[in-house]
Length: 289
Image (cartoon, rainbow, N blue to C red; front, top):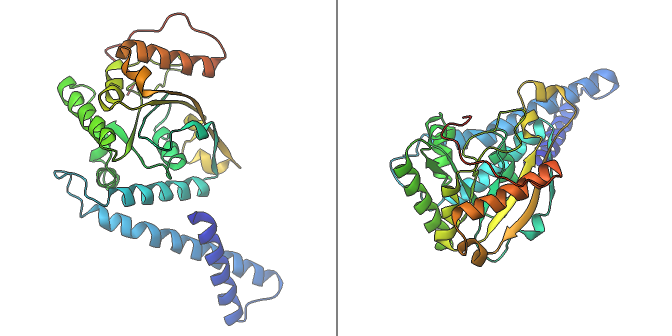
């Protein structure tokens, strides 16, 4: 983990500097140590992110992600973990042991915040997973290029033909044992305060059926409380990521996408509310972006 490493390096560097400058002793010595330690920590963070920023300018999104995408995914996950630690955002995880270790899978979860995939990438950083993301994210400066380099797959939610191509591409990655894939069946971020889950876009689950892989069902809570700069004023912000079920590949492929979506929707709803739901809402044409 980068955060404790940078803290240790900063403390040692600050201590050495204070002693070499004969600043040690008394309250002023402590203040110098803290100030220098903070400065060295900021320097460590900048030196970590600088190569990533420079690298982002070399990425050409018109070309497929290169052979180094696993390394880029790992660097991104470690960078996100560092930022979460700095902002005192803690991720509590349950049930991750059920995630398949010997096969690729499709990761699914509810979607309540832009921080959902970031938290999920941190948790799954040792399991090699990429995400399907809305195409608008790919146009973001620096971030968009890094996402492309990390093998993130853009999807145009308003263009069915383009979305199908993304589904086929994601299925190919899993079928060829290249990486697992994560997506949000709701299609949009749920910003409706009285709605537990948005209707699913069941067609997205075709990804798992085409690849013949199991589906990992999870729910996330608390990520919608991560807002800047408010998060910096809290002592701690907790995000919970609970893994609920792994649907075997044979069961995934043995039902329609609608039946599969209904099963996943009910599982998520039951965990989020503690109640059973008899009916599942059908997908709406418009959603919260």
